[in-house]
Image 1 (cartoon, helix red, strand yellow):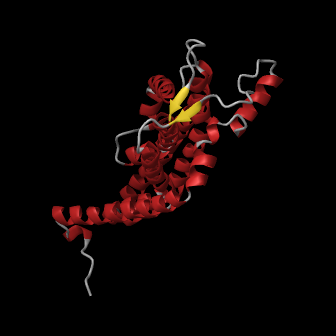
Image 2 (cartoon, rainbow, N blue to C red):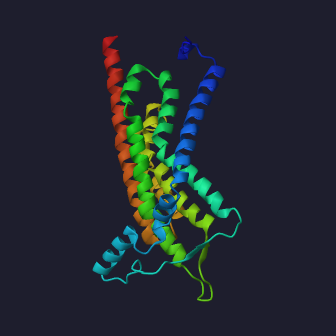
Image 3 (cartoon, rainbow, N blue to C red):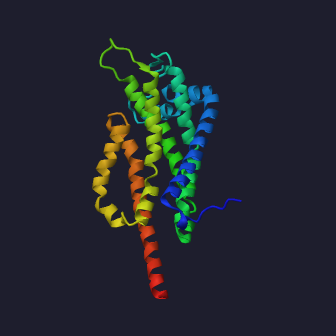
Length: 278
C-alpha cells in the first residue's frame, strides 16, 4: 500500500505534483457541476440569467415600492422589458451555453475548490493553526455566496437597468448582444463574491504579519477611496448605485479591522504564555 509522504520530507517537485492533483480534482469537480448546469439550460438561462432583465424581478419591485413611498418617479416601475437580446454569431448561443455552465459549475463548486486548496496548505501548518482555521471553508464559502447573492440581486439589476435603458437618441434602439449581457451578470456576481472574501484575506495577512489593526485604521480613508473606485467599476456611473454597493464593502472593511485585532490579540497571548512557560 502506498504511503503518503510526510510534508517535511517532500521536495519542491513533490509539492508541485501534490498541487497538480489538487488542481485536477478541483477542475474535475467544476467540470462535472458545469455539465449538470449544462443540462439545466432552461433554469439557468430563463430563470436565473435572464431574471434581472425582467420588469417583475424582485429588486425592481422593491425599488419601485421604495421610490413610490418616497414620492419619487418610479424609475424601476417599468412593465415592459428594457431591451431585446440578440446573438450575432453562428455559435454565439452554443458558446454562451458552454461558458455559462462552466461558470455556474465554479460558483456551485466553490466550497470544494476551497477544500482542495486547504488540503494542500493544511499539512504545512502547525496543529494549533489548523485547529484555529477549522471553520475556514464554511466561513469563506458563506461570504462568497453572500457576495454572489449581493451581486445578483443588487449590482447586476442596477447595472442592467441603467445601461439597458440609457439612450443617446430616440433614433437608437437597444438590442443588446447576448455575450455582452452575460458578461455584465457574470462580472457582477463573481466580482462581488470575491470582494466579500476581504475578511478572510485580512485574517491570513494578519497571521503572517503583513497587516495590523493600526495599519488598517491608519489607511481607512485611502481604503474608502479605493472602495468607491471599485464600486464605480462594477456598477453603472450613477451615485446612488455606487453608494448602495460601497456600503457593504465598507462594513466588511470595518469587520476586517476587528478580525485583525482579534488575531493579533491571540498571537500576543500565545507569545506571553510561551514566555512564561520558558
